[in-house]
Image (cartoon, rainbow over all chains, first blue to last red; front, top):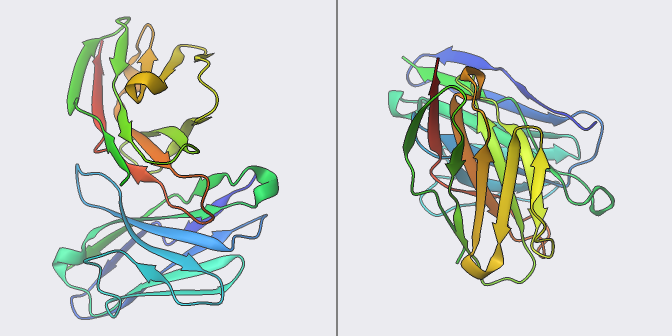
Length: 117
Length: 116
């Protein structure tokens, strides 16, 4: 079945540096991908909706200049956390929406644990 | 606006007990999907079920069952004869399927602890 792969699964970076997280749909084309953030013991909060070939749509309160999202192809979306700070430490998870023929099924990646030290 | 409420923050049961996780949703759309996911400590989301708004039939899958009632906007999840491996955070989610590219809106989750 369809799989969404997310990489890296865990990353530690120094404060002030940038880190990129990739989300790939492995055997289907995803015109739309979603990025979520989850703080410990909290729910998943939608950060942005990423559409292939266009600018991402960010949720209210999410800094678009800090969380750069690029969806350059139908199988890859990337989230770059720029100038990361310890408060950006979180679990980031992406999802991709399959085509209408597949019932618009949502597939989630495995998630990425980001620790900023 | 969309909203998903999981009023139970934490539930603790002993193995073999039955447990029901509650989910109440709000949406103005007539076409929508409801989901349940399991999230173990490793973090990945394990898909359990998807139900569209036009299908109110209850569903059973092994020890899992779901009760969808549009009249009360609820989509409750029951685990029968719980096991230690069922310990996890469970999320209920809602998607307005009528709109292309709509994301899932998650409830706050219910942490289930099953002890032996």
